[in-house]
Length: 286
Image (spheres, helix red, strand yellow):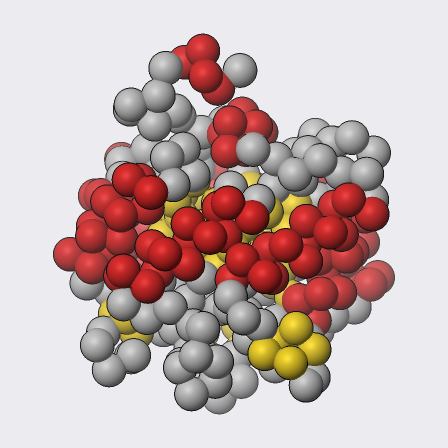
């Protein structure tokens, strides 16, 4: 299989702290450095959250702006994807950074259970976030915690609430949500292809120790992969990951074993239908 594989690195998230793994990047400067290392290792998308100085999650647009500026400077061409997840804020504060016009943003289109709470994504908020993404030309990554979320994305696309072919990410292994189940995984792929076409791109993310398994499944099945310290702070039960880049390199090794070239940022933009950076000539993205 020669189809390029997109590697997304989720660098920080809302939950992991230095106490869990000292390599978790918290400050904007740490996040930029960690992203640059992951970019050099093969990641072409960075999924980004921001934190307060006390490591608690934040939705501060100024922090997102500083992070975007730093990544654009040190990782030219890399796709920047901001999180609009519910742990960082409530209501429309979750989309307060979208006017910064990142390349992408996560979009959860339905609610589900999390380990200790309900992850609430009410329809009116989902519609508002989607409208903001359309307004600022931000491509959503549909975070599917359940089969119904893929079907909801199809409904939204048919109504013109999403531009282009949706990019769906299967999230598996969150406690109380969808477990890691191979039959379900295969049916997710079938559903994406049935609804959006055989060439529709998709991605998978596994939480904790399931990260490696989902990387292996997705890459072998022709999909794209997410890795990073947001989802998993360990290489194995006894070993902490030394960096986001180390987890990216592990995904690259899986690509090599499956004869999948790692997608460059130019290839990733082509596959996902993303605009070119303003300071990049069109010819460079061929």
